[in-house]
Length: 107
Length: 123
Image 1: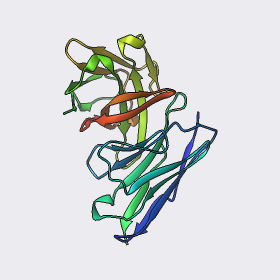
Image 2: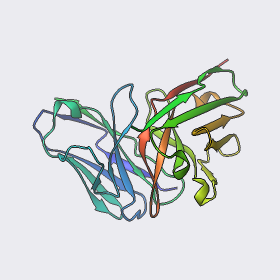
Image 3: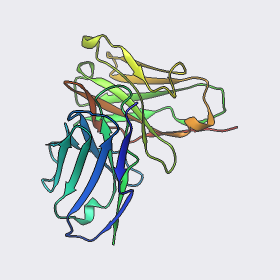
């Protein structure tokens, strides 16, 4: 199985900060990676697919990059609504696996 | 508007069975694969399994942790996906999310999610 390692597990930031979350795959997954945002008690929401494609309706301050084994999710200017937990997920091969999540907290 | 609504969760004893349903609306259900993802209390997301659309054979794939115990099926006439869970274990306790799986050349990602249904396995 392909393991997805996210870092950091927790990130403290302020409104207006630029935030970067990293996701590493245990083997190459080409660009078959998605990013999700989850708020407490809510379902996850798709942000990015195919490593860098922005889902319709998602603010442009979110961006994704990377290929192979290393990927990043960047929030260019952190907004109050962005405090949440973020997960990466590969869909290169079965079983699809998620990273363990990165919680973005208010500093 | 795409909507996915899960139902059927609850408290069940270890070793027993439970069936979850995911009722879809706002899109042509038969054209899409559907997936189940679970989240144990305070933990991360775990993919459970999925079912392809009939165009792609309607076949299924499962995570190793549930293979042989869980079965996913679909009724395209009713726009419902099911998750039949047998031989339940305490470690199956989680919120179970239904999601629409969007095909992207190599695999699928999850573009819409339901609100989740809590399954508690306890004696």
